[in-house]
Amino acid sequence: MKVNQLLKLVLIAGIVLRIVLWCFQSNPCGDDGQRYLTEGLNMVRYGVFSTQYEVADGEIPLPSAHDMPLWPGIMAVVYWATDSVRATQYIAGVINIGLVLVGALFLVALLKGKPFRLQEQNIMIALAVYLFMPESVIYSLFHMPDQLAVTSIIVALYCYFKGLDGNWKFLFGAFFMFLTAIYSKPICIPLSFALIVAMPSIMTCPVKKRIAGLVLGFAVLAIGLYPWVLRNKCAFGTSGLNSIAGTNLYRCNWGWMVNQFPADRMAAEQMEMKEFESKISGFDLMKRSKLQGKYAKEKLLTHFPDYVLFTIKQHPRLYVGTGSVAMFRYLGAERLSNALVAMLASDKSTDKEVFNEKPYTPTEKFICGAVQILSWLILLSGYLLVAIGIIKGSRDVVRKFKSGDCNFSAILIFFCPVLCLVLLALVIGPIATTRYRLIMLPFFSVLAAYAYSGSQEKVKATHLEDN
Image 1 (cartoon, helix red, strand yellow):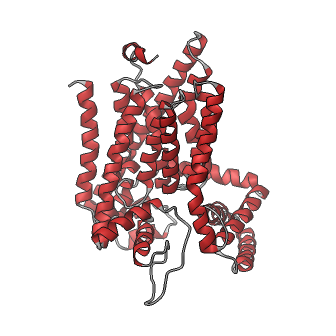
Image 2 (image 1 turned 90 degrees about the vertical axis):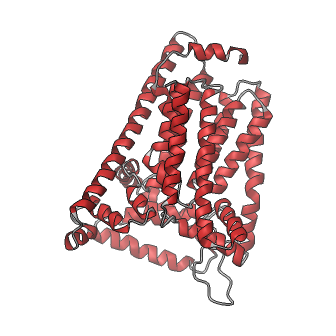
């Protein structure tokens, strides 16, 4: 079978797998899907962006700013058109599968064109990582904004690299897609700004055009994000993009670290946190979030060595999870989901106690074990491809640099996805939730493409006219 046919087969298999799982869905909420659905429903029912699930008759839900509005807005449109919660959930799954397909097509176009110009074998590896990494499969089906953010980043990267010669259409397209990614997931904020800041160093056009592109990038993001900042100012009295940054720093980064302290030290810190929360209870949501973020930053800097050790201890867990528990719940196999949680739990865990009190059948344990082992094998294979890609790609860059056939811009282009992964790892820190890893997927895929080390001469000849 020809390589291009295998490439199409990989793409079709990835989409068909998701369609089959979608057909058997039972609980498509995932980790936070209910919150996004509630925001969408409240936008239609009350005209308020709110996470408040229960609303008494005659009342209006309190506004919130924890999430960005793009995905809840999409769900609101679907709910407005269908007037059915269940239909909204099903259609949201279809939209996400469509986004997977769009992301796959743009990933192929990205790696096939300038400046990568990779062969179909390379692209097939990248596509396989994108479509079949375990977290990619299940978290592209829940009605959450993760796949929208991933697809937006892939399209942004395609436009970004196409616009490095100063093409304004592609540059504007990249900035617009960065904006779309940010309106999907706040974690895309530092990623988008970092890529825009790095852009002048990679561009191949005159300096004036590079500076103009940098200014345009910041202008598009500033103008595009301003309406939501203004909305929050009107809703709460304090401007800001969202409340999740301060809340996560306070409750997750600092709060989880406090829980690791010895008992007496933990009790003292928790008492101080309660006093702090009492002091800020009268402020509006955005103001409280900013104060929580400031408090957490001060504490983390004060205990910086402890925080570094805590992050080093927690962060590796980010790369171990496969989403198997979430997949069983998606399919309505709650008992299998609970069995897998219990099997993976430590000896001291309450889940382990439940497992011992209410034993699962050998068949149930076999299914759970087989699915989990298969998921780990696929995950490990993906990581190996990424590692091989980094090694081979780095070796190729060094070889070309020594021979004088590689400039600084080409080096940055190769290491761009590596640096993006490092940045995302730093931003995620100790919050080792599996679906947080999904935003890393575009960069894993690009790096895995270098795992195949076939000759590039044919590809270069094909694209010679572009030079």
